[in-house]
View 1 (tube, rainbow, N blue to C red):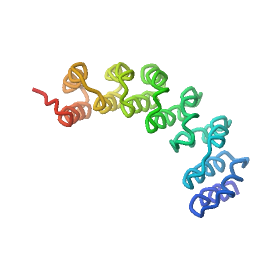
View 2 (view 1 turned 60 degrees about the horizontal axis):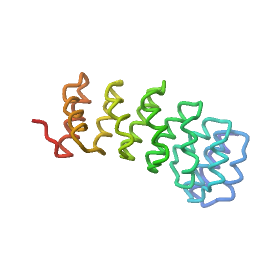
View 3 (view 1 turned 60 degrees about the vertical axis):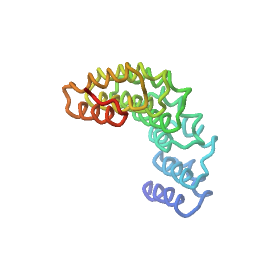
Length: 198
């Protein structure tokens, strides 16, 4: 029964049934509420009020779905979700902040990139800092070059958004990284940014 309602909620986004999707936002099942959110987003009808309610939903799947949508109507909700107790929500909120270039979230993104216990959250925060490309995020991106291989790779890619001798030096250093994918990423970024290694 829940799966049937979830499917109905998702279908609203394809049939133009805004009223049906909005009604299912109050469903007892979190997966149905999440599907209804997605339907409203697809219809371009997600409101700030919808986003505020979803950000406060007791179910992590609803909060995570809101963040995964990265909808401009929900922009005011994403910075708060960076402090969510659920790591999956934080990861998705980092993505949303990067997609929407949430400058106001830079400080929190930098903290997550450097200190969050979940590596996926750190990786997502580094990616968001690179997507935003603001100078205030550079130190955290450079710091991520000492993290796990997948986070180092993400940090190297994020450095494409920055310029300066410190950035070039960091990229050149990564050409000697233990992980071949990090080395390849550094080579690619150096080439794309016309900072050819000597």
